[in-house]
Length: 348
Length: 206
Image (cartoon, rainbow over all chains, first blue to last red; front, side, top):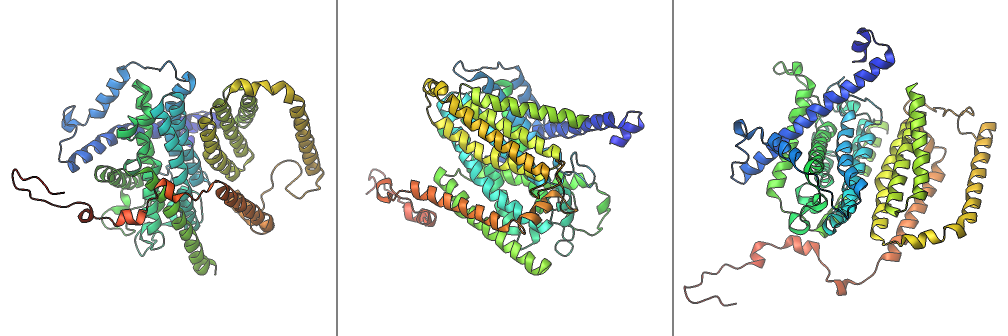
């Protein structure tokens, strides 16, 4: 895009600057729109599984429900509890929202369509997503209220536990792909198994994919692991004291994170923007990569809501057991297995 | 130009937040300032071209160590007045430690400039070992030349971890009501429930 702005008669520095701003807007604005629609989809899926209708009043098929909710929240009064730590109380939702948007900078939407094609892309995502816990912890502490504080405690323990196994899972994928760059990871999956694009068909990496999906549920605090906002115990968890836009920012951030995890699952294991099969069936290769990526993201998001509608919440000790006693040894074993196999076949 | 601006931004923020770590009245604020300092230090690393180190700094320090730090500080009920009281008394000791650290830094950088240690080029810019990314360069160096030191660091960490577990682990299964997860998972509805068809007006026999 920089070339385009240079051709308009800007100098290189300015063109780069304007192009980057445009790139950010091109990702962030559709993402916000996508989050609004994905909340609607989430509610529709739960409704269908519960044999309800779901949102169906605002707009055709209730499509505008999220926008109506957004408007309602926007018009509400912002309440800051008098005992709260004001600065941190306001910063926490902003932090959650910003961090949720930050990771999208390195997500490849197509062979060329990346905002920042850096060579430590996967590590960058891992680093930024590990910042996500601060929004929760700070809001829980700054609210100066019991339930948010409990929620913050749970969140920090939970997210650290599952980040460990996610780290090992990422190591396996990186070992196989031989790079941290997300675009190259996608390309490494081309024709991975016969004509199928994607690591998921690899018997050594398939169990890792399952573990990654479950860890992603835990990392985004979705249902079987939503102990941070267990409404029967903690009212609404860390967002209990929030109202108006600050509450909405938590919501947007949460769903942007879920979308990110879906995108990451499809990029790491399902070939990202590559078509599922590497043969020219119909005008198969003419479909732009972003369509494939979005379809895969939608599929995984459906899985997320499916899990939410069908699985009961874990007990806290079960959550910790799964993270530390099951996933950690298992993912460590797979790091050994994958590196051993690669040593044998690729470098042996 | 943007490089220089970014450097001064990060550098000023590192120093300012470092100062705020010491000066903040609330320990939780101190930890948050410390996190900001880590984060900006990572920004400086990116500017030098050491993006791998920068990401590790964020993942390890910001993402894990500082969270645990924050966790502990939030749980503790610290008396701020008491903490302040020792400030004047301990100030000279603190100054001495700061001077020692400064001297070490000056000595280290001096030795590096002279070229006594083989780290990179003495003009301050890091020298890439391979043609590849700096992830590959670090890997190639760490697992060949510094393998022994690297493994020793690993062993020390392992010992520390085992030590922490041994110190805090208590055998008190009976007192707490131990849960057997395998038993819980193996439990089926048939074991726990019983279907009864009581006659009207008869009640159920328990």
